[in-house]
Structure formats: C-alpha cells, structure tokens
Image (cartoon, rainbow, N blue to C red; front, side, top):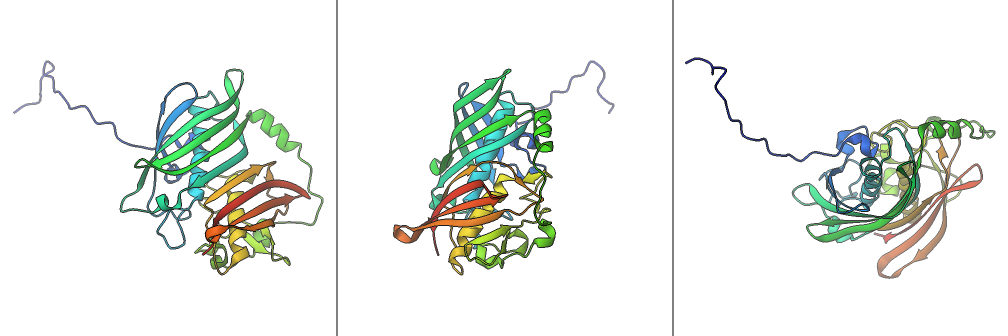
Length: 314
C-alpha cells in the first residue's frame, strides 16, 4: 500500500481549544507556575470576565495546615488581573513599568478551602477610573471579585500607575543616595522562627527581630522563588504585604493571625540598599476572636506603605 497521491486529501479533526495560562509577561512573572489567570473576555470597554486556577499545594500561598488557600493569594491574583488588563486590553506596552497605588481585598475564608482538584475561579473586573495618555492607560482603578462555583471567594479593589521605561530609569537614577550605616539585606538577615509568623520554612520568613516587640526589620531572601520571581531594583509590593501579615502574627505568637482582609496603600518604592522597618501602630480587638492590626513600613524616616489587616487569631 503506497502513500497518498498529491490528489488525495486527508481530513484531520480540528484540535480542541485547550486551557492554558495567559502570557506570563502580561502579569510580570518569570515562572509559568506563578501565573494564575487562564483567560479573559471583554464585556464592554471597561468590564472584563477573567478565568483562572489556583494550585492545590502552592509552596507559599497555602495555610500552615495545608487545608486552605492563603488569603494573600487573592491579593496576588488581583495584582495579576490589573497588570494583565493594562497590557492586553488598555494599550500599555509590555516594557512599561507599574506603580502600585493601593490594593484591598476581603475574603470569605470558608470558600478558600482546598478541594480534591485545583481551584478554578471566575474573576470579574470593572475599571472604575481610567486616565488615558497617548492612547494607553496611564492610571487605572479597578473593582474586582472572585467566585468559585458561584460562591464569592473575595472582592476588593486596586489602583495602578503606568510609567514609561525611559521615565522610570530617570526617576530611579535621581533617587537620593543612602547616607546611613551600611546595610545589606543578606548580611543583616536574622529571620524570626517560622512558627512565630505562621510560616513553615525559614526561607519564607521576611522579618528579623529588633529591640522592640512591635517593630521588625524587613529582610526577605532576595532569591526567594516566589516573592522574587524576577529580579527588580526595589522590594515588590507583595513582599510588603507578606511583611505586614507576618508582623501581625508575630504580635500574637505562638498563636497566628489569618489575614482575612487587608487594605494597603503604597507611597513610594522600598529600596534594597537601606533598612525598612515594619511597625505595628494600632491593635484593635474585634468580636468573634477577630483582630485588626495597622502596620506601617518606614524607610529613610518616611512612611513607605501602610496596611490595615483584619482576621481571626487562633
């Protein structure tokens, strides 16, 4: 039996469209494993329906007992959604940089339980404010919500500014030189015991102790595969959020605090070559075993970010 002649045609079945992640570059991630969005459909110019999936056993964003997704996973997903929409739907080139203005989330902890399969979710995003410049978004305010099988997992908001790469380089080159004592995150890293901050590994601890029981030095591992998924010239916003939640847990150790909701504001970049202090500035007990903690980050005697966290203590 010979090969088909040139006149012969072979009808091949159409390949089904398979699920994959969105391009990692759109969410500023180097590892495909850290991309949690899988698709997007525009409902109109300012409303978008996205899909995504969380793994069953993420090495960082999982509760200490392994039974639930960490609430900070919703913050990271909101961050990815904002950057993805800016690039894919709102005209922002991939080489432009972002400034995180604020990021807020509230979770339904009972809907963060890990099941027998990865967590597929739907994310609704609405642009409540967009500033346009030369055909692209230069400022973006979003309202976001995540549902899992129809149940609300989290809702919140975020704002992002966009900076052209050339402008970013000039701004970073013009920053004031550090005039204080020599500081090296690697050399000055003396991490707290993991159990005191709700973590299972020393590698995941981002705080080092000070002489004050309500103040810590922010000293993450600069080669952490998730918090530093790609190299940058400043501490990422998610490192600051992790520092805030670890401070809240350190305050109540040996118990831990689950950051069920958080409202965070970022005022400027946190530099790598000078110390950043994480301070507890307010503690308010709530009903039902809940607690609200206000955390402030300080660098060069200036407030660089604030985060108000509420959650159960157990």
